[in-house]
Image (cartoon, rainbow, N blue to C red; front, side):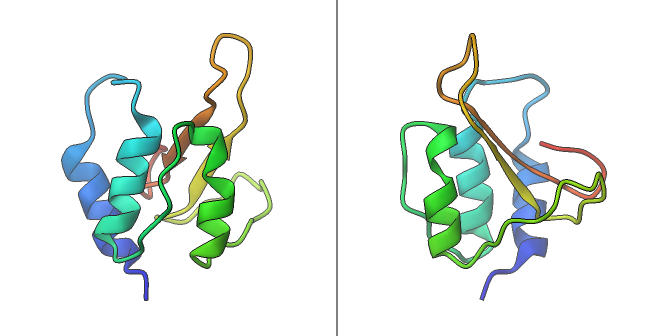
Length: 93
């Protein structure tokens, strides 16, 4: 069972003050600190299937998020790898 509290604590404890360009690695490590093992991918945009396989489900983009929610963003101009982050209760990390 996933402990999102542990995941968010890990996320907050290891957050950098600016981008290290390793969003997928850091988000994956936070998720795994909560007790869920994900398949590793080279690009953030590719983590959707790993999250689904681990029991994560898509939520509506309502602007209201809970600690532990994870976002995966497809690649875009200037960043073909996409982006991945977790909501810590205050902001996306």
